[in-house]
Image (cartoon, rainbow, N blue to C red; front, side):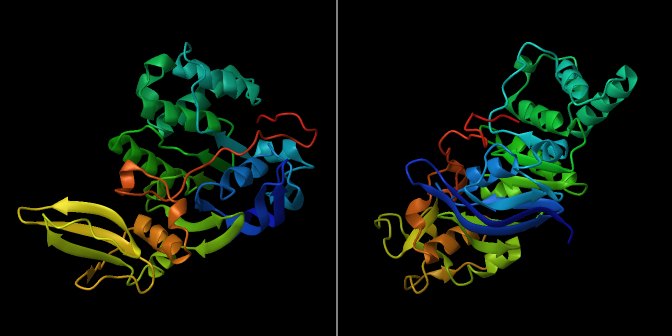
Length: 328
């Protein structure tokens, strides 16, 4: 696997002594890469360093062989970035946004630029709304426009931050499909608090916890860690909610009983429970964190029943090597 991003001994400490990254060694190759972890794990800090927005306290990161601190311009030439919030250009037409950004990226010839804008809009499914103003787009369309602006200069690396926040289930599915397609031709680092966003296109992921990488492997390997920990327990409707060394994921009511689906710590499956045959990736992540004694780090989310897995906490303001706030 050819390496796109390589981090070595990466450490970052914010003012006040907060350690965001603590000795991270990580290599990322082509395809869709998932970056997951609980609140405060260090994901945002790692992404900002890769995107040249933040200089690490120690260690190094290279992107296609270019140092992310010493060669920021060279890194940015290969980088496309979709931040969590992409709400600018509200009064411009979709095609105007991309045309302007294409010109700023160096596409000076109008005909070539027009061809590139049309191709990118078609690739993200926005060709039919090219003349529509940004403020008239749905939330899902705005996220796809965000991907389009990140692709306009044909980057080899795409960094995507919380891509489906605020989107309905249909748009989430469409976005996952788009990520899987784009990942065939480039490297995508996708940081999300909804594990299902990784979709079937993700074959490699890393989990950060307390600034350290605690798991690195494939989604299948993560699921293997959950063997015997995900279970279902059926109780009468009148019975109180069960309690124990486990985290309840969902409850389904039928005519006479309530069926609870939950994830237990090793040895915590209650008597009378049935081990689930096919845990989801979300449950695999939850099982991993419960086994680490980190269930309290999980946050509520409607897409994961009682609990969700990760979030992308905002660290203190990102600054560059000069101490000034940095922007891509």
